[in-house]
Length: 136
Image (cartoon, rainbow, N blue to C red; front, side):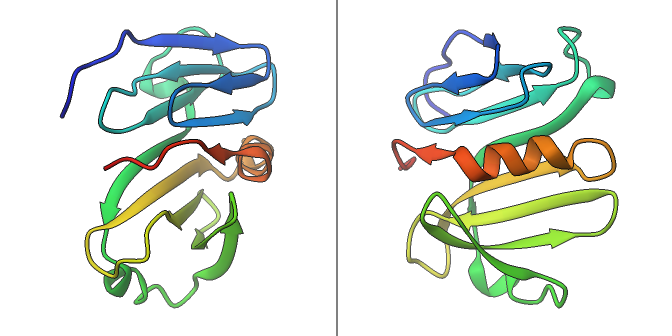
């Protein structure tokens, strides 16, 4: 998976690494687990970065657009000037943002958040995220 970078935390409402930059509610904490080949940013409600305190994540992944088209409740969206789909089920809000035009092995950015308590964090990040570099 490439060389691991040092895991870094960010607080204060602004985050930036080599892959993405965005704003987020300043009471939250960002844990950057990105490396030289992909990005993975986790969002926590405290500096205790255990799974119980995770409220969301933003990460890169290779998806298959045709598989994702089977979601009947998906809403078409645009995030960071890229098309995608958003799926909400009351518990989670999840967006798949297509970073390449391929239909298989599509470079994808996924935003996955707790919809009950942290929809505002999802929305702020979705509204402000900029993709600086698309993973290979």
